[in-house]
Image 1 (cartoon, rainbow, N blue to C red):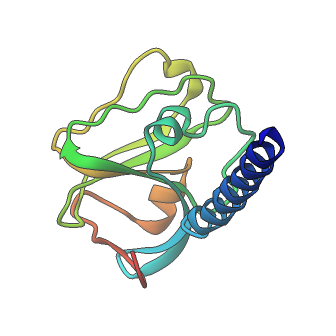
Image 2: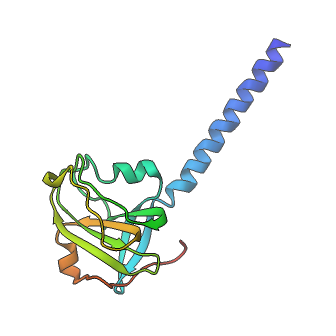
Length: 150
């Protein structure tokens, strides 16, 4: 009887482990998305869970893609801070209509513990390397959208 229970337990653990890794791989395919701002295409990393949004780019040496896109569950006044940041960034707040509603350029790690907010509610926040906003001539009312499946 104990042997049967042990066998069932081991099988359950194996199945749960398999499903965990299978689901984890499916989620990782959503880790990066192609977006467009004013018609220019960028591949950005996605931060859609609260843990990912809290960590952001903290403790990283740089941005591995074209940017980090925070996706929030609802449109609101989302604050961004530079806790444990090692480099400067530009920050864009984007509303649910795909319009850039606020921009902060050249935000330095030394601004922590200040929390930066847009002047309008946003659904997304995009962090890019410092200078990217100027290089691309992005401005309030620049148009943002997802490319392909969202």
